[in-house]
Image (cartoon, rainbow, N blue to C red):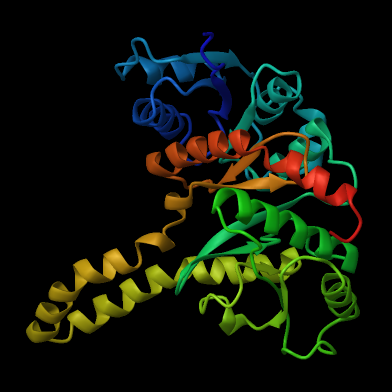
Length: 339
């Protein structure tokens, strides 16, 4: 019997703040953690990548290198950079995916550039007006998918509806949850609250066959009131960045508290391990990266400051999303009116 074909993950090796060192190390960790399931194509400056590979024991690991002569930096304008830097590691990686040489593309580079490359090179799924990104936020019972997390700052009601559909399918497939509860982030629970777009989106979702529970407020996110919380990217990104700042804020408060006395220092020392364990899931490196939902392919975006663990988990996330056929399911769902 013929063995199943390995997934091929194209990794932008030049995208992160510490590229290519962390990218190469993360790829190696992913391949060692789950051997024989996928291979990684490192995309970027070949000389720099091979210098990093020489520092590691990579014998027999399914790694290959594809040269890209340019890099899109965090300071570059996303669409302009894609136009003028056609041989950037992001663009080359995305084209490898589009042309069938890879099954997914992963990058910790410029978020706007990765999103633009995914949209322009891979193309949008039919009936998706705007691709989106969603990210899991730890909550009292598991986690909550916040979508949009920063891709689209100004949205129409139809787009919010599409985000809800895409988010629901993503949670259903990745978290194995039937009929995820969807909440629309708003300034109050009443359906008459919020902007025109929010009120119209409420109507569209109420008339759909999805598990829509109505409007939710900011305080409901951590309470696990909904499995999917929908909002525009302006609000979503603010919520996300605020949530990510909580662990470092608490760390700073504990440091100040412990500096007041020896007893305080002792108390903090005793509570440090359980606190770290409790906040473990709030580390963005645990999630790894977020998928671009609504494109013809698998594109995963990670933090520019991703650690080796973060890069490893981005690659594992890409393999998981590719195997689950999330975007094909989204295409089928949006082809049916008001599922």
